[in-house]
Amino acid sequence: MPVRVRIPTPLRTITKGAAEVSAKGTDVRELIEDLERQFPGLRERIVDEGGEIRRFINVFMNDEDIRFLKGKETSLKDGDEISIVPAIAAGAAPSDEHHEARGRSQPERT
Amino acid sequence: MKLPLTEEAIRRYARHIVLPEVGGVGQRKLLAAKALIVGAGGLGSPAALYLAAAGIGTIGMMDPDAVDLSNLQRQILHSMKDLDRPKVFSAQERMEAINPGVKVVPYHAKLSTENAPEILREYDVVLDGSDNFPTKFLVNDACVMLGIPAVIAGILRFDGQLYTIIPKKGACYRCLFRQPPPPGLIPSCQEAGILGAVAGVLGSLQALQAIKILLGIGEPPAGQVLFFDALPGEFKTIRVGRDPACALCGDAPKITELREEGEVCVL
Image 1: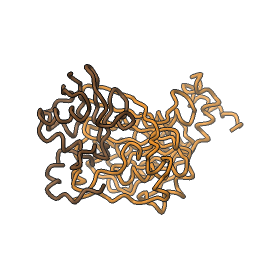
Image 2: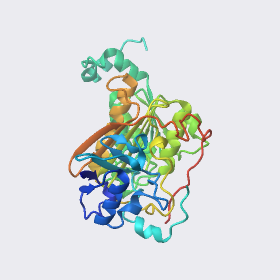
Image 3: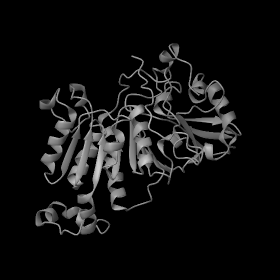
């Protein structure tokens, strides 16, 4: 069940520049796992250590915030479109330098 | 509000007045309106120019910084002669040059938990064009608490985001992003780059959204979220409802007073 996934600019270094990729999964959780298989490193940018969607990232399925659906259990079907949207502020966002920064990362607030 | 438009105003705003959705009544609303712009940079520049040209009667402009040469690639309020000058003053000069009929109130300061309530409460709408998350959250929180509509924009590289916050009616910035990215997960405060014209698109959209709110025209703005991706040239608009679990505007708010989100600069 291929689903189209919109990748935000800050994460495109992981998808080799692709703004849209195709991934499979019956729900959002499986989709994220498939994205990780295709693009190693992508998962940790989207979900935290506990497997929850990061607080400064929103995931939309066909224009609906998945938090208002069933979160990661939101089921997907052929042709759905998923958008991954991090908060951005000019010059400060979860971006490429993120990985460097992780080296110095402090415990994440939850 | 009942004062008739002067002959000069009728000529100046003729292209507005001829629009049935604006008309003389709408133009008088704009002339009586007060808008605050937080950040006189890439977003605040086009927003300020359009709000001044549109005859928004009072425009507050807040920014703690001075003009740097690297700003001129996108911050079209400022000129070479303004280098090292506080941005709010070059902004004021430029806006008044376009339209001496508007009152510009410069605030050469950073928005803080202390100054936010007293400044923001003076305005009908707030435009956030700041370059950092703590300020965006502060604008959002203060506007929600005071019941003032806010139009928050963010830009990075080729991407832009526009959030229209109508307190209690649609998603606020905190409904969407519960907190700023934690330390270590965002880059240092160095510029990640931005194409100047992308800032122009988003700043213009902010001005447009603010004008629509002031006039009460168009689609109901509550919870409108717009994404712009310049490379494929795509806009996408969605609507997000208020999150009943939001710490700020939810049914059982946990945030009841303004707080400073940590500045996440790891330089």
